[in-house]
Length: 302
Image (cartoon, rainbow, N blue to C red; front, side, top):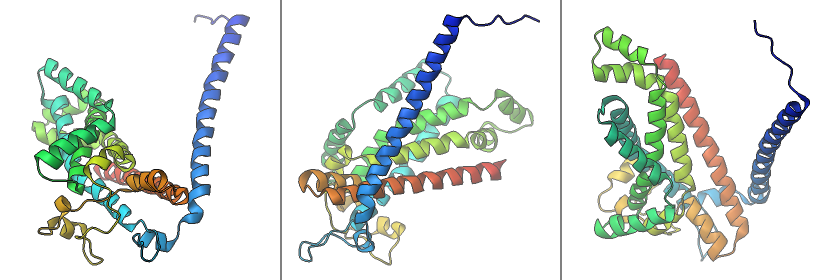
């Protein structure tokens, strides 16, 4: 056996310094996060009430409510995910399992990584010109959702790709050796083994959708009232299927846009902090739900 020589005094000092710096940076990051969350909750939670969550703003009654903004956020998240998950996961499966032209794959991966770094305001301008004007959707929830599809699809593709690459090649070879077809092997072996990465991509996408404001300012609108297709007894499916008054004609502000309006345009910072606290709670609930769903799916597949 080769004996390890003890570190010199200079080497030990260097090692301890780097270790201290790493712990210091990690602790500072955690403290900043805790301070940010605590400050928002302290400033925002006292201003949250049942009427604040379940009513719409009214100048006649001199009341402020964010129910329309909550509904708009939920609609945009659901519609965006319904479009982006099949497209993103399907593209990742093709690039990882089917594509044989390595140059084409590299070009697509470079394009997706480039899209990730583009400022969201540019997506908003492109969405306004293409979806709102060229396609005639005007300022609507559907136009905002389609714009967010472009914003978040690189996240789904890249996270799913990396997750698919972590599946051992022996799994694929064993399934094919037992007589499984290509798609059957992917559906029953590869995808269940990479469900964690897909759920992670979904969580990251939801976080980007919920936190997006610049792109939605130009495409989804800034309406603060209940959309015409919403009823207390209706469901999302009925709303999407409503004739003539669906997502294509309903514009409205999401929670992030409402936060911007109340903080920047109206200088009502108490309301803005309350919306910020609700956004953080909503994101936490969505992330926990997605994690639980991913664990359940993995357990059932396993």
